[in-house]
Length: 172
Image (cartoon, rainbow, N blue to C red):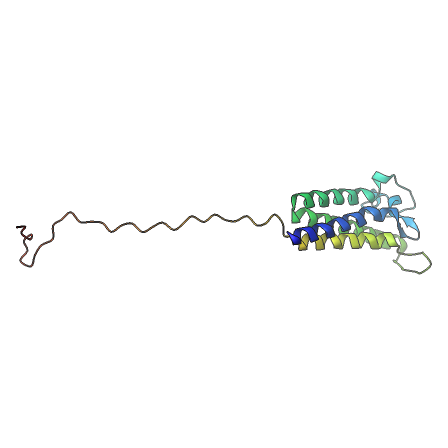
């Protein structure tokens, strides 16, 4: 019970951080909600074109948050872990594509380079995976074992026993 509550709290914190991350700066002050989702999969890579909210990296994070929420309600560790992998996968994919477009990824104190939104995205994915690891799940289904069959009673013989000379004993 305690593990499920703690895992659920971790998962919900992770889902919140993941959904909140596109509304913060990811790279050079540009918010994650402005990176087009299709640019992650195109040959052109990341461009300066702005995206609509549901056409941005917000969409997979919203789907991951929904998966996490359903996983918490159903106590399904697999769904929460899948949400964490989805968040981390899209974050790493974005980092790879951004690194290809810029030539390198940098972190600077003046607000240029990698931003807080990317950190929230990574942290959210890690929290989702931690939540899935901590959750106990549905409480293991107990296997019903059937009781061992009782041994069969010794068969009784209907054949009369014989005395020492090979004849049945006499009854008086």
